[in-house]
Image (tube, rainbow over all chains, first blue to last red; front, top):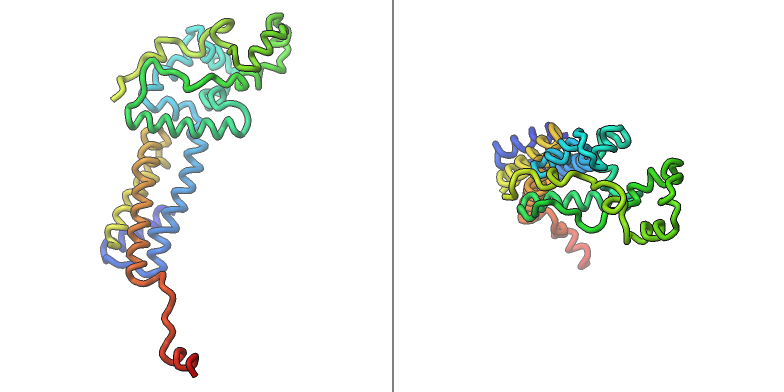
Length: 187
Length: 71
């Protein structure tokens, strides 16, 4: 798709004119189709851990996943509880179709913050963490239900109303502090 | 004008090729914030040029058709 467009564009560049059909194809249809397909590629490939870690500010967090540091992300990653390919997306996208939409919008905001350099360290989550990401796997698990604290009604209500999160009071933080604070300075 | 449109669209396709070769954050940024505006600008220049050439105007009736209508 790109190659025919390039041929037409180089021809137009050389001659300074294009026929109606060649112009519409090489300047409008093919490039737009290439962009549409690339957006689909980007939507799918941006779920990958390597994509998230390719920006310098995320590199220390990506590195910490494989380390034995006691953080929740490390425990899940090292024990194969989440996909090694899409670990960031699994936990940070939220649950359901709107979770995916929200994650893509958040990704767009991340790119804008990276371009403008408008972000502070230590990095902070924008809003509260969506614990549906945790509960979508754990809620039906026998081991989770067997824990006495999880059976308490007041705790369940606090979790469901988002007054309380899994991390903080009961479980270790999602990522180690030093990984969140590390990374190259904002430019 | 056509040359300008070609250059803009060519530059935007470089971003597509970069993204296809390696889908990374920096390439996604180039694709979204450089390539896409360049493509939009290239298409806009081309459409403007076609408009100047009269591509989007309704065809004028020939003198014969005009005479027949009057008759």
